[in-house]
Image (cartoon, rainbow, N blue to C red; front, side, top):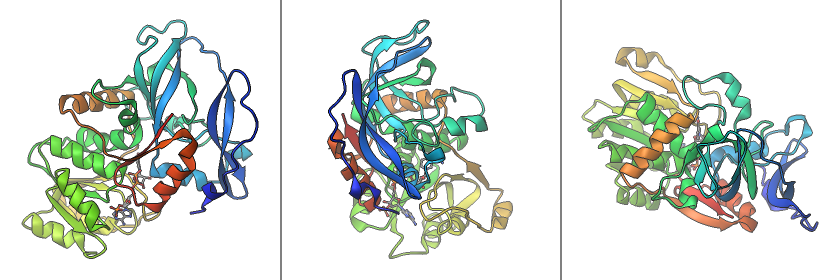
Length: 354
Ligand SMILES: NC(=O)c1ccc[n+]([C@@H]2O[C@H](COP(=O)([O-])OP(=O)(O)OC[C@H]3O[C@@H](n4cnc5c(N)ncnc54)[C@H](OP(=O)(O)O)[C@@H]3O)[C@@H](O)[C@H]2O)c1
């Protein structure tokens, strides 16, 4: 991973009138470099909402985007995840009003129903679609969800990618129920949402991590068992031991090539592996034959829809769950937040407060 944020050229230009502070990923060689910038004010059009962003959060995806070649040499406002306050609404918008606390969905166009491949190129903060790391954002009203009352904007900003992905995997596709067993890999954003959401549903959750200190924190959050995957690389064998040889009902597969075969070994008959992550690389080539003899499945999961996000928020409110925030950063400290993400020292989410 290139340490592109080390060379952050903070803009020295004065802030123009009618412009908001932002960050942009600018093309540099084979990848991109993070730099501060300004965005001209955009008029709010029919069906749209103008937001003043209050907080944003980082995901592993944002490191991948930083090192991707810039498409057509264009710069890009990064990050998909944020929460803010409605400042103005355009003609025809009746569901939101000034002062409402809202979050944009990762896929603004995926409001409900089945996924469409056309949504992929329109995900916030990737490809050619600008993201939310800016003081103001104009977005379609239909792309927004209300922030649960018990959450701060900083907490709500952690939900759109990591929270919704874990929810989609376990609840929408996995149909998790009390008494089920779950395994999550590591202690990053998706994994800890998996731990919190599944525990709140009455499931028993096994957490793997490279750090005993992080595992102690996972137990304090409700983990049923924990396994250090550095000290115990055959965590699949331990998982089978812990479940009387049966395996677990759900696995959030976050690792990829280095973890897949072990996930297939550790899944129970009839269990479901949620294909989510690429932490150890792309193009996993696991032996999937054992799935057949277990009547087990792999579900491909790509974040989620507005409707699913609303159901996640209802569950967060009902169970009074608060996301785990590792550290908050000021807007000026965005490069430090990227460095913390890159270090993988974090436990849970990294948040930018505007
Ligand atoms: N498909 C989707 O819609 C979707 C959505 C969100 C995320 N993702 C993917 O899911 C993965 C996690 O994303 P994130 O944002 O939650 O990441 P993150 O917060 O950056 O989590 C990083 C953590 O992953 C753990 N990890 C790294 N290698 C591991 C391994 N071999 N085994 C187990 N854990 C390992 C480490 O935990 P410890 O320090 O505890 O060891 C590390 O701290 C990424 O690959 C991301 O691209 C996909």
